[in-house]
Length: 179
Image (cartoon, rainbow, N blue to C red):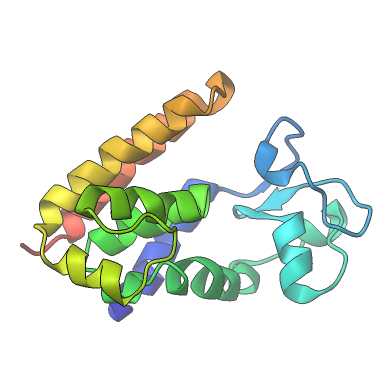
């Protein structure tokens, strides 16, 4: 729902934390596309920040970012792309947080759960099929699909953190759900 973006962004930023420069993280392994090594601030990789701003994003730039610098990226590239404003409360958060971690894989998991074409793009047809399902059940199934996805990645170093985040997202999504 449209009114949930600010609340969901706040929860997301709580999950993402601050600055990291973890070279084992596949999410920031591409650098910023301008010859600078990869780093992350509030969950936005230097690569994505550089693409969004069309400017280099070395670690010293990433360190200076504020929440308001990354909010438009999360809105446009994740919330809007995953059509979260068109999803029920709770499911919007479940899909948004997963989409930030897994991109189109989150959309494909939702599509698989509801029996829609698994193209990774949530459009009118997917939304129509989603509307035919119980929201609480979809939230629970998204949690399960997300956990399976994380386990399939073979990155044991991050699995406990991802699992905790997934559990917290489920709890928060259920609190948001107004069934």
